[in-house]
Image (cartoon, rainbow, N blue to C red; front, top):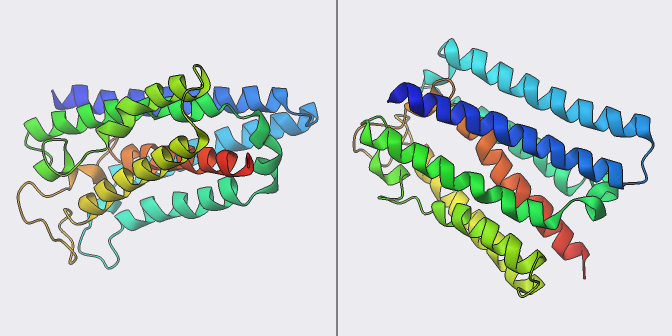
Amino acid sequence: MYLLTQLGFALLTLIFYGLVLSQLKVALVRSSLANDKQRKILNRVAFAVAIWLGAISVLSIKGFFSNFSSVPPRMMFVLFIPLITLTWALLISKTTKELLPYISSKALAGLQVFRLFVEILLWMLFIQELLPIQMTFEGRNFDILAGITGPIVAYLAYSKKVLSRSVVIAWNILCLGLLINIVVTALLSIPSPFRYFMNEPANTIVAEFPIIWLPGFLVPLAYGLHFLSLRKLINEK
């Protein structure tokens, strides 16, 4: 069953990596950017994410992230490098500002459905006694609500147009709160000097391949979609 769970994380990452690139390509085609610049942006994003996934995969397989005694925990690098990069790329970059009007608001909300599948996979790890209960929807993890409501918000706000801009802003902020909650819970569950949750098993599985793609890609994907959605909504004043 663990092999099935591993396959689930790998497929989920690769599928949504492809979906993100497809949405970026659509936005680039809709924009007024020159064709050569469109290709450069798409290729750079695809290459950068692929290199990142490859790098953390190799380090994970070599056991680099499984050393939880270091201060700060090595897992922090997996979390903070994408956070710093995406904060600049999605909230500050002039290129993103140019593309923003052509990015699908409906897709930004709808793609959050992947979080539903993440929660199912986390629960599968829990029933295999590989993950502590607080990291599942049976414990302190309510992120499944973001995955369930994402497509609903996308449909009601952008197809039916019955949800106001302020409601969608509030939804984005609340779902960011859900994400912060589980990330903090996960960090406090690893066997580091900062561990708070002492129940077993400790959160060590997240350092293994391909589960490392959860903090390395899927978590950044979640807040990255929220960052773009909020930037678009704020610019629509």
